[in-house]
Image (cartoon, rainbow, N blue to C red):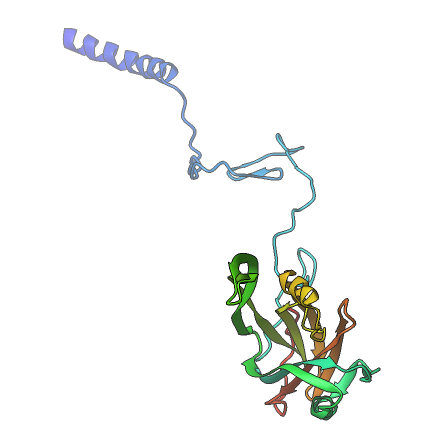
Length: 290
């Protein structure tokens, strides 16, 4: 009897214990939880990956300003977002024959009026021996894009001082002997030619330098007066210089004339001619001044 009453009491208390346990534990949803994405926090406008935000962005920082140009060796071919800038193609090297001649014009020589001559006309001027005197003549074969240098020079003695030593001659008369001191001066001619192709024409950068020593008595006749001869001998010599630096553009077979005149009235003509040896080839586009 006692066992039966205990069993009935236990059955009556089971629902109450189950309800109390359910109230004490947290409730769980039967819906499946969404999978947690990767921890990515990259903001792009108003969308943040992993979470969609509505409304204005939380933080916006826009910096405006002019774009700085990048250094570029060559002409511009478009805008910043346009076609890429491309440097002009390099011209194909060409073989050239360059002739440079320095003439001293006589009193009756006439300077050509035309700025451009032909190679044949240049040769005719050189052949006029009675009108022009050839001082220097250079005939060079070179390649475009390279500089050619020719130098001709010498060391000439120059009197820097004179000393008179008194003495007596055989007849007992007082006389003096002269002793000169000398120094060596570098004189000569320096020619630099740097050709470059520009289409079917040749652009020549010419640098011509010449120096020489002129004595005071070179243009004067000998005087019987001994004092005048001594005076001219004691005068120091003068160093003359001539420098011509220019850039000319010539076609194959053309020449040009550069004229100078010094303080003594002496005229010099510098003739520059060019011949493109492989002129039959098709020139490549591009190229430019150097």
